Length: 372
Image 1 (cartoon, rainbow, N blue to C red):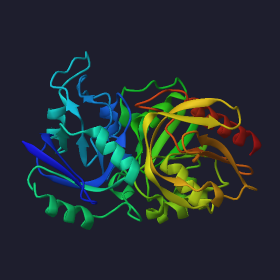
Image 2: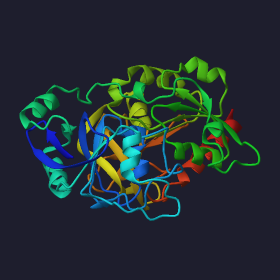
Image 3: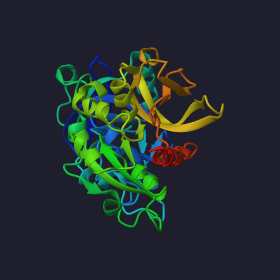
Image 4: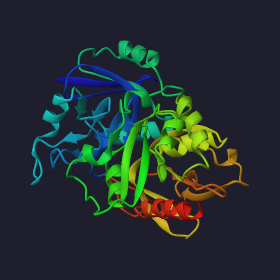
């Protein structure tokens, strides 16, 4: 079946559909990872986005129930150069086409993903429509222009949990539970990935996940050893209720934030955020740890960033910098037990260079406990 992807500036790409049929709108972005397409599709941070994979062949190792980062795919659409018709992996349970059909996600193949990626890099990420039912470019351009963008939009409400739950229970047997819990952690769910929960549990954390709308007083009433601010989709300024509660938590307990968690933390600390031209999405982004001088190859997925110059340098230390564009990748408070990074130390997919950050969180909680 024929499919079409149209950007709001009138750029058109025609291809062949796979997965579900229908029509979806979203911000069209690209990811440079060579593997990990299932983790990417199920990452809640991609809510509201149509994802283009730059690697030319996608789907060759199939799909399985283990490599998911949430309850199901969160993307609005999936764009590839070539979908592998053959799956070959001992874990594979089904093909990409079947998986997308089951989850009502539209896929399109056979387009020049290099051209689309270069266009996004030049013009910036923009709204688009992927369709198998309306193939009129003029109609689709109009739909793209009239569709909601990401600026100021609260996408967190669409991916956060409805009620609190124990991370260990949700993950079942897919993580290595320690013999004894070392620390009690409350994780604020703005779109949390399963592998973050695994890393926290394996570090020794007894993790309770709470909705993004959770109140600071209720979190503190549980007397946790630390508080985790998760990743998530969209514009951090579209989640003012979370920023307000984070401000009430600062200085009370150790805080560790990842991705959207860093952006919300930056706003809570009085900084500003801005939208990147085409974002950082992939598993090969070089980041420099300014404390050690070491370079980490990191997994990333974000379209917004904290403005370095908006932060009060008397209180906040810049700890990590992106070596591709010198944007902010990590901060730590000089007076309070608070730190965060913009990238994904839990990977899935991606390298494990940054897993040490979970130990840093454990050490911070231990130090805070001794001092208080």
